[in-house]
Image 1 (cartoon, rainbow over the protein chains, first blue to last red):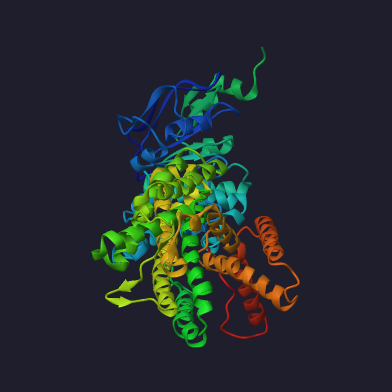
Image 2: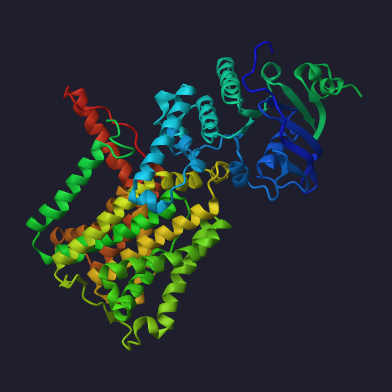
Length: 264
Length: 355
């Protein structure tokens, strides 16, 4: 890329070491390792059932892999749970949308501010001044994100009533609201039309560029992946079959075989 | 209508003022019959308070719990024993401590919610209902070894002044209910309520945002039980005026559940609407039976009809309006407003969607 990055790609922020995950007898991931560098856009691609979402779920602590470790900022994370990873500064979106359906867009994004909310329920009940102050800050930050994502006009609508593309945006907003240093995006552009995809790419790159947030995304649209990612890791049948820059991946024979099929 | 600050809008303040004027000035001036206070207004306030407790755990946090009456019993008997054994606490102090004791039970019986959900949790929380009633029945200490099994509640004395007339007790209930309702609204609209609703709507995502499921669920159970405990104490001291565990049986729990669902899950005002409906509906049916049919219909038949209608309404609401009567009320106001604004009256804006 020609332009100068404000946040230079740095050391590995997240490392996945020899992860194996099986559901009963079905092996989802086998002995997989790769790393994510700070401030980069990292794509995970692979055919259906390659174990991409399972990989994110392992990193985020929703699944417990039978083997292997996740290293965050150089330290192995023991007993990974979604909560612990959130506290360490890792946020995510979900493949099948996991929004709070009956809450408004603004409230959804405000939940993302949870870790920046220190007041307890008693203080909230009594509406102490510090609660108001904190709430005001959180609301301001959420409004910023809402205007960044250009969804001001729907901020009071319950998200359950929104079309799919907008819900995906809200989910990105909620992840952004955490101010995490790394965000995992599970198919952020699935089911979107070309225009919506272009918007989403713009947002992802803009966040990465302006805030230096490390982005890990799963995506099926090869054009998009090759355009926006710095490095790509390719999974097939739960194994890494390619890892490198988009150009390297496009020239990788194993990857081509996995995608186009190969004559036996 | 921009929020003045945070979530209090001008409309909220007007609503509060209207409610206060109505309940503090208008009702005491125009309603003189004791019947209204002792049989309708006081139980309404008490049960509405318990329903808010049920709302917090079920409507906001989405945990199917069925044991509100158990916590009410815990609160009522705690109150009796505190006034009896620790008279220095005073009425208000005892009320708060009774709520806290009920909250402790709430934490204990809320723990299963971490492992089981849905209908199974409902069965698990039924344990609280039976355990608390059993405990009070089993150990005479709770009833001060009274042989009759029914004990009389002490008179309410606040700061040396007795509150024994129906009107005075109505004001006691009103004050407590108002304060606790405001606190509940603050929680429900603030970060606490957002955590509850996040757990309700999508627990995995809530956890990924840093919301602790353990803390949030247990907190909701504790606060819910606190509200039920205080409501139970008021219910026993202002309405029943006697304490017997049977008064807090499973039927009362179901009643509160119905109030919660008919009123509208996840709403605070729904608690009041639901409680009013369930309390007043039998009164209305009886009045119809006596005045229209002049007693031609047997009282037992009327109470059966009541059950049938409640059951039907539950089914109808679950299918067509899961958000209950509070939502119907909201819709009614919206349609009124849109009629007003279409007829050219200025200053009436189209309503904003509210949670």
